[in-house]
Length: 126
Image 1 (cartoon, rainbow, N blue to C red):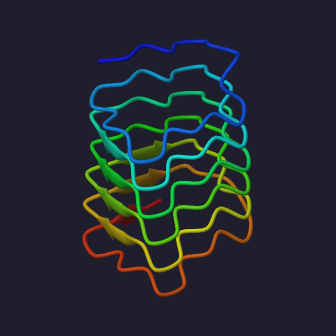
Image 2 (image 1 turned 90 degrees about the vertical axis):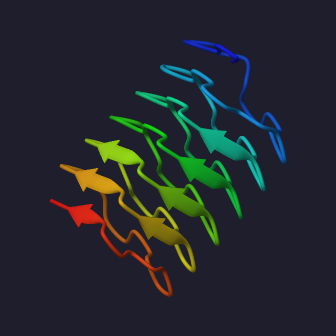
Image 3 (image 1 turned 120 degrees about the horizontal axis):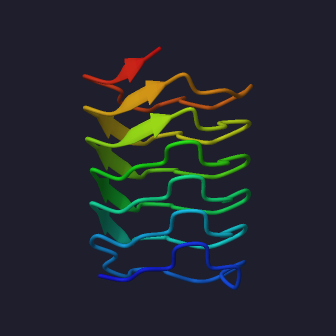
């Protein structure tokens, strides 16, 4: 269980193929970070600054992105289950070809989020 709460030194960090169970990235600067193929379960990214981050083929289970800046973030071909995006900024966020199930997008903001080819069964958008 890693805690990076409010860490400012993770810009462009590479977490590819890592097991990030219960990791805490709240209030952390993760701009340009790479999480390709990472297993991210029960992790929290509340108010994280993640602009330009990449989560290709990542597996996310019960992850929380409340009020996170996800501008230009790519979740291409990721698997998201039981995750929460409350008040998050989804400006140009890419969910193309992702499997998104039992996930909630509540009061999110953003223009041009891309869900092309994504499977969004049992997902809530409000």
